Image (cartoon, rainbow, N blue to C red):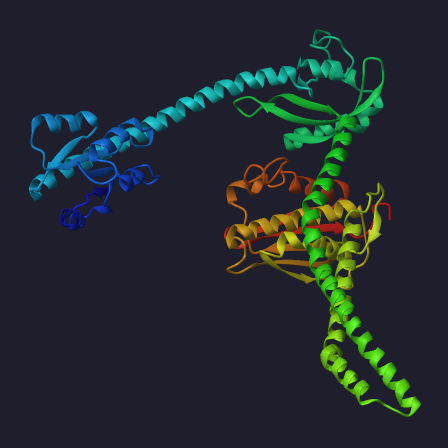
Length: 547
């Protein structure tokens, strides 16, 4: 139990503190009403407060009144510490919100009894408040469940995706309006009771529907592309998810299907991928500008140094020329020699001979650095291609790491271990680069959650490539927070994120999964340990499917 003492008298305050500490209480001490009020408003507010009736800032009576008016501190038990003995004064204190009082000078026995009573009441109030919160949360969950059920019923009917339920014989039990319209029927009454075969040609039944339904029966749920026909005979394709419905004994009784026109899905996927790429370029732009600015700055500084040095050297050369002409004429005036010496000293030729080569070397390094960044950005932002092309994964990964450097360099050191014998791998280059970028940015965020701004030490991001039989394997390891066990099954779900609002869209890993698995026929998995880090493992087939 935490007890707050607010008392401006040193002796009374120390006696109270020592007495209550000896009794085993956790004591917090303040010397004025302002600090006492602030302590009672904190997240870890004391359950019991002993407040001096009169003290600087706020009086004990004023604090009691403010406490009762504040929802944050309603459970705090308050004892007024006072030398007042008049009944009217004590009643006024109780009416203000105090729960009791302790008279000055206080008697230890009286103090013990009043504190013990206050502790018991404070504990009861705390348990009561906790129980009230539990009941409020339970009622809130009930209300949410009711709202969710109403919303679900409305969503099924108003969903833009077609929803149908059929028994195991194929007889339609339910279709929503979207399913009817998708197949060219005006109302769902035209479909209830009919066989689902009306939505497919014989060829589609053999090629798509029969294998699809068998997978649903085997796996209880399956998603895939299915061929359909509309009422007028027009063929089209849907992305369909079907789930087996069972009764309470576990016996299959029906199948529910949710279908979406695949044309729209492909359009949205392309749009989403482009938006993700543009968002990434936008996110990296400021960092790239910063990365370019640093080498450009010392190139500029060195160029200005060359300009000043050139003027000094020109002056010395002009004096040398005059001295040479005088030497040829056979008469060298002493005045000209002195001017030459002065110009040589003012130009500090020895210093220039030492510094100019260094400045040239620095400038060339800066130009090389800018060239590398620009080339990496060009490779990353290269327009996408619809067909796979064989690429050097090591160079692609290195370019992506370079353009993202400003996003990780403050919190992590980057280590690479590339397999120099790794063959070219057929890829969609821009989409592969996006996958690497998304994972590297996630790694930097996970490390930042541990090291903060990196001023006290950095984490490590390690990227390696290897050939594993007929697969190219990329491992991206970080020393970040790791992935909590409760969310590991959701990391590849669209729009799932553990980041704060505004800091993550939940699309990065979902897009990475789609690109690696669906578009490249590869795999993406992870190994993680909470508090120690995560390793994402990407495997891509080295040979094209056609080959």
